[in-house]
Structures are given as C-alpha cells and as structure tokens.
Image (tube, rainbow, N blue to C red; front, top):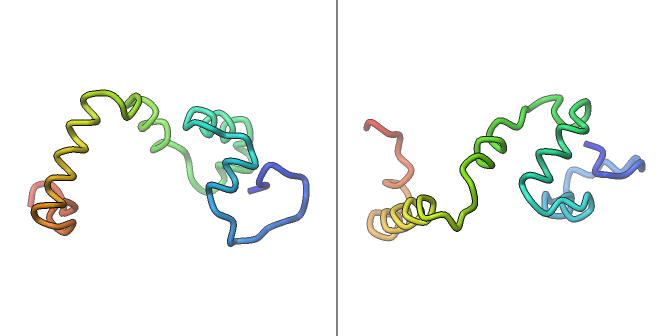
Length: 90
C-alpha cells in the first residue's frame, strides 16, 4: 500500500482509520473507488468482493439490517458469542 503518499513510509503499525483519514475516504463507496483506481497497488493480494457485497446491502439504517442486528445482539446477550458465531447447519 502506498497510504496515499509518495513517501517511502512503510510502517506496519498504521491503523486502518489513519489510512482512511489520510486518503480522505469517508464511505465504503469511497474506499471501493479508491481501491479500483489504484488496483495495481491496492488489490495485489486480495480483492474487494466483500466490500462490494456490503455496499450492495445498503445502509445500516435499513430495517432489514436493524432486525438482523437486533437478533444477533439478542443471541449474544442470551447465549454468548460462542452460540451466535457457530457455523450454520450445526
């Protein structure tokens, strides 16, 4: 990653939040567009399919997300994270 700069700074202790602020990326759509514009550097090892799928889901303010989140929160509160994160079909 070039971290939106031409410097040779390559610290491995840089937080993702720092990178987003440094690169002026405020939304997931901004991040996707940035990665696509710089794919020769940013998408060498991993793609961004998960980002794109998340973007297609819409905002977290939508009722479908809120209901799903509430169900997950209840499961964690009731049974603990172990039950909420087990594989489906088990």
